Length: 195
Image 1: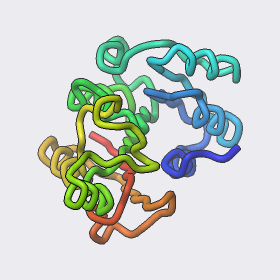
Image 2: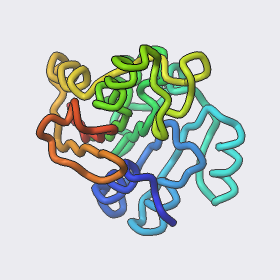
Image 3: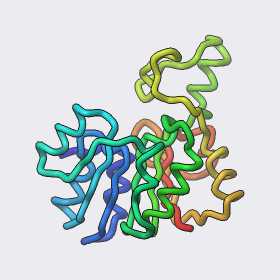
Image 4: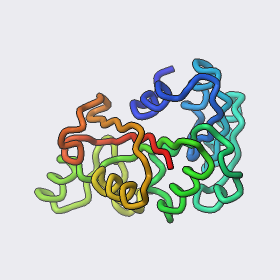
């Protein structure tokens, strides 16, 4: 099974046999890969009922829930990793969700689209409209993205809160790229964080 590029990076860096909570796990693709290739004990939280059903049909332990309200119910340090892939920008309170991730997991993976990528900037500059791209396919009025963040926004946010960045990976067209000028060149970012 082929994983989305950000998920593949996460999968490559999760320790064998770890306990993982995948928040916004979608259909469970990452959880299944971690279970099958790394012997991970993976649990999931997903808001969409259809995705929950798809994940459960794969034999995964996934419950339906909302990261904005349900993460408060998880005990401290109950997982080795808490994962939030392509979900931070859809949360009503991403700061609170991130606090919970770092409380629940000893480490946290966070991946998100970079709204400062040069194609996004060019679309706004030359077209004057919110961009619609293969990676951001929804129009402004039907997008689940309610917080448009950039790599530099995220770096500043974690620095201000004293959160340690254990690793960072940047993707352009699904291929890993260097951190040089990542805010301009990368379409997606993946961070591994620790409090």
